[in-house]
Length: 299
Image (tube, rainbow, N blue to C red; front, side, top):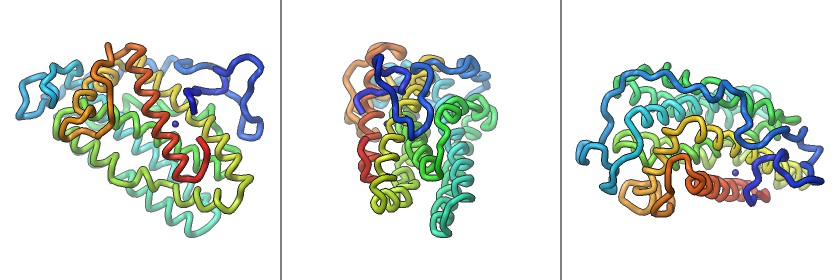
């Protein structure tokens, strides 16, 4: 999503980012606008524990740290992320250079709305106000977008591929801390194959045929993932419930049935601890490297 590089702002003195992929950033991870620290309005929620589990237990039989409210918060984040991706893909499709590219991106945009609607339907089943849960995250990508303005259409496509990919990966890490029905919905959405294909074919074809473009996109990808990691760090700091879900998820993702299959240490400490954040960043970094590899680009 690169040894841990969280933006040009955190480079040692004397080092700078590439001038031909956009202006360098001006702050370090967590240095985001105050409005991102606003906590979502609490709404009444139905209990979301697994029917077959002891109350407050994870599928591994360990007491949950996360609350029902934390679970609803993650569902709201997933739904909002899908809506944001729909808007970006629709805009990219409208400005695509070829008809084939417009068709590919338009179909992907439609898929994002379907994914969002599945999460919203589940939120309604839990007795929440789906739109209100999404509204709690309205604007969370604004600062990321401001810091990563693309200079070409191709940079815009890669921005979506990397940025939304990091968001999906983070939600996947936290999803194993959810109750059974919620976990099934979120992991099903994030593992439906759309993430792996989103914009990949369009980017890979262009990069293969143009080594100069491929080099520029590789540099741009490093800039993008650094900023995306900064956003994740801010989310973990400002929304501790997401951190609690990540810690809970380790009981499932360590190999228990029904998990995402992501290897996790036995103990990540507290939800806001440095151990947990370091593990999250290492997982996102590894996934980013694999994602760029699918494009034939160096991470």
